[in-house]
Length: 370
Ligand code: SF4
Ligand code: SF4
Image (cartoon, rainbow, N blue to C red):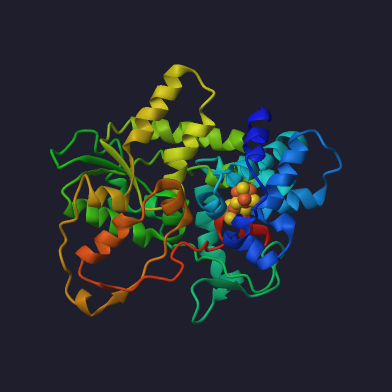
């Protein structure tokens, strides 16, 4: 890793502290090491060759949600999340990962077969170990389980994963190689969240694409976008996943690659470029071609495949609000499109005071800091 570029980036900081008032982790932790300014000072010192960095350094880096609020509000444009990501990658490069993290990322997440198989099994057994959390969404453990602990809400695995559904398999690359002469050929990237936990979002996406007259393809060869590995500093795993996804989507010959997940969208549009930036010109041009086709569903339905659903029955009586995911608004610049779509379907809208306040799930923070 060439550390000089990161040291240069950190040197743009004038220590004004403005970023601290936007940082969700500083807001809770109230210590300098939990603030953007503190984190960048630590990275600057470590990358500059200072020694004596121990567990506290790793903790300060892991406690960042990578929300990007500091970067958006820094008068000097210091990219703190990029420095934190570089710090995490350097830790992994130098000191390796813990056995559970390495097992999950390298053997589980990176495997096209093992992860779906193990999660299918887990979906059948989840009722034995977990129960519904009543009023709240999600599951609570019935016993004090190792790793999970007590009182942690977990998302419920779907009984039937999105990519396993018969009508979704009928949209696979093989089944849809020939275009059907629709308005556009659109390949859908579901991602792990939609595939395993929230398949209704996948179903709604397919429905909207159909309404727009698209030829839809859902490649069965798609794998995790690699964001959990990238955020944890395991760039090797993230890179291998990026390549598998690019290959799976190139085969479709689609005009657009659409996702309904903000984090996957950021991965596909921005992180793949970073991961493959040191490859030769042929790979880099394939990455650029891939990236140029990626759209968040709200972008596609606002621009290339305009939403034609009109005002739905009963929507006029609804009042909705909208939370901007950090990965959509800050990393992809998509914020107007979802609001326009909400207006187009006739619902009343009431904005939030802080529409882009981090949900706390970013950067793997909640795994170790529930
Ligand atoms: S990162 Fe930016 S906002 Fe934060 S202390 Fe440095 S210059 Fe100020
Ligand atoms: S990315 Fe978010 S959590 Fe991390 S230092 Fe910046 S504001 Fe804080």
